[in-house]
Amino acid sequence: MKQHEAVIEAMRTNGGYATLGWLYTEALKIPGVKWKTKTPFASIRRIVQDYRFFFKIRPGLWALNEAKGRLPKNIQDKRSQESVHSYYQGLLIELGNLKKLGTFVPNQDRRKQFLNSSLGEIITVDKIYPFSYEETVKRAQTIDVIWFNERKMPSELFEVEHTSDINRALLNFVLFQDFNVIFRIIAPQTRLKGVQSENLQPLLCRH
View 1: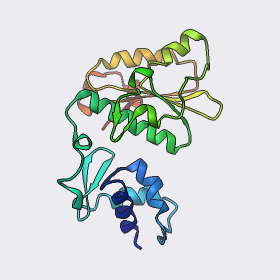
View 2 (view 1 turned 90 degrees about the vertical axis):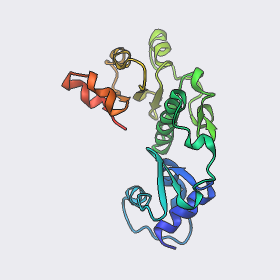
View 3 (view 1 turned 180 degrees about the vertical axis):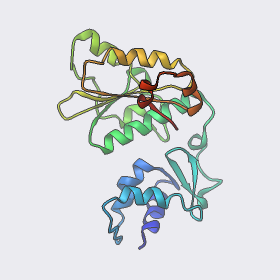
View 4 (view 1 turned 120 degrees about the vertical axis):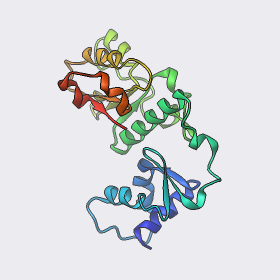
């Protein structure tokens, strides 16, 4: 079996669509395939861009051409802001899980949908770790996504900003500046125009 056939087979088992994070795990499990590369994830990213077999639904989410017209409606829902927000939270959780990090989202977000699951079903940290003073931990519980390392300390904090003020996220991060943690804001490129300071640019992730 060829590599692209393994990706197709993996995607078929998931209903004809899959996130890259899901493919990174499941496509490599397909028997009879020799990847012969130290960077199989890069190979998968290249394969799904072959438009003879696949099409892109949205960033990080791909589907088989043969599945067009029969994908679930919620998979293609790009309109509601809540759907967009929880989708990117879900991608971040998948990526954190893939890195074998603890993943956490606020309690009020856990019933929100990410494809065919709720966010609460895919996180690995149910109750936030008491990594600092009570007031600091309480504030951390409002961050959109947190990755925890093996020592149960926060390693990366993410805020997904589509409609709310990016400055609010930046102010949130200021509270954690004394921790050895990476801060990231996930936002459309068009929303980054309002951020003027060059030293803030590394915090911003476009999609």
